[in-house]
Image (cartoon, rainbow, N blue to C red):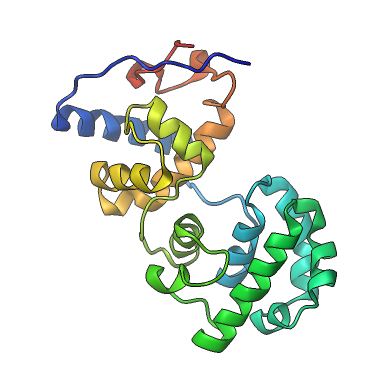
Length: 225
């Protein structure tokens, strides 16, 4: 079992920490100047379904499933009326297909019954839908509507936020709270995406490629294992 990476202790005051965070953000934005979700979609509803499917599944696999899925079920009404056993088979390869089927049908029914078939644009409304938590809501609001409702905290953002010294918290909710305090609201949408992209390309989970990292000189975890 690989040794858990340690992080150098930091003793920054809040101003210094914000300055370092901004420097990191600017460098990552240069590497990823147009950060967008890797999930293929044509509208907010498709992104919502794709994000539900992406739980415990790679974006690549989801993108293999959704073209046929969205051709078969074109609207929230169609997903709401789907036969569970049939939809389970349609999404089986994404894993946890029974739970995801229940979430997708329930979410679609909620959109049809409560929101006139349109994806709501308020966080507090989105999270009332089955299968939709803060992460999914933040993805949809940020990527589909350009609304900075918060910072998406997936496994990559969770890992990088701690490695980069942005937070010492260990739950998505507390990490998001620290990130929204550290970064201005106008950066929230891009922040989550550039951290995800950097986490996939360089700061990978098992063996981070610190020697190839453009922010290693600003990272309290660089070179540590």
